[in-house]
Image 1: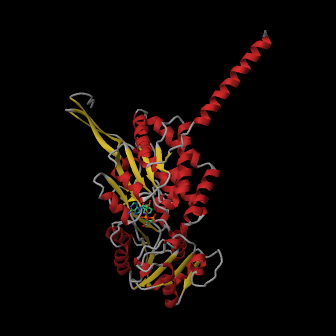
Image 2: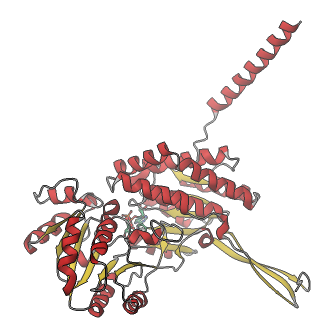
Image 3: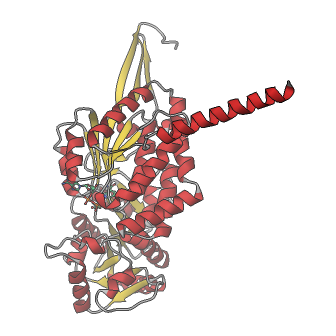
Length: 467
Ligand code: NAD
């Protein structure tokens, strides 16, 4: 009798395993990756309705699941390596830092603070509510960082997101989106909170921008795509290009300034939009600054002809950077003009005038022009010109509070970093949360969950005022 019972139980367990096995093998769910953009949008719309029924606490659990999955050592390393391998941009060790801060330091639902107004007429609350389906276009320069950062912010805000990654980052985007959706599903989240199309393309991005089901567009990239989303006839957030200048005056700690500038300008081979792109240093300290930069891994090109030769080698005819050389190392760039250096060289520096092409153009390469200036006021004026009205990021090394204030005020940058590498502005060695979508043109600034929400008011008249 007892043996029969055990046999029956074993049979039942085996049947269950078999059934589950059949279910898994017939399951064609591809964790958010779809053949067509229409399917990706439809799935996102369905998922958003389901997410809307979940509590804010559940949303917290979901974004925590994304964080935990991405922060697994093997996953962080894999996506960082894959991103560099596929895009041929940047440095693996720096991508690991960027992916880590995106996962750890992007705020969740705590960002959504309700506002309450009370008085003799009652209680009114204003809350951050979801937009619905968001279409997000992401760059090659921060491919995985932006997916992690946007996913956390947008889902915390109660939205779902259809990504349109750069085609050059297709494979790593697919891998990461599947990874995040799998972790979400295991945490009990609706399927397809994050979707994308298998073959990202300009045509698919157009379909996404034109879909009435997509309520909000977010573009992180150069001026062309920011202009596109702003012309789409619906709410759009544009995070565009910068050309961050650095000013160094005679009051700065020059040794530290040199070290910080080399660190910031060489970070991920200078592709971050916030990275130092040109320096204006006052005459009295410029030699000392260059000396210390060279001690910290910078290679100086002293001949104006050679720097022009390098500039020509890395630029296209129209003056734009050669995309094949964006995000390459200093060593690889110098090899273009027959100069051989070791791996210890992280940055190329050269003294130029203020109108040099390398000063005025956002190159996204570890080549940093240094312009000497008679005084700090002129340096601030020239930095303002070089920033070209992007109002993106600026950096200053100085101990003169009046001049720091003057520069901060004049440039009106979304991020102004004092006496630190530029990346302190996105929470790496500086206070404040991290974002990889810095929305200067449309004003949301250092985006977070609330940037992707609608403010809605709820009014209770003549009651609930308890003061
Ligand atoms: P990019 O503008 O070439 O591409 C960005 C995205 O837009 C990609 O997905 C691309 O496929 C898409 N795209 C570009 N033009 C398009 C068009 N006409 N139609 C449809 N899709 C289009 O930029 P990139 O080289 O990938 O990234 C670097 C640029 O992005 C730099 O200028 C950098 O400063 C900027 N950026 C800004 C931020 C920010 O937060 N403000 C962050 C990262 C990068």
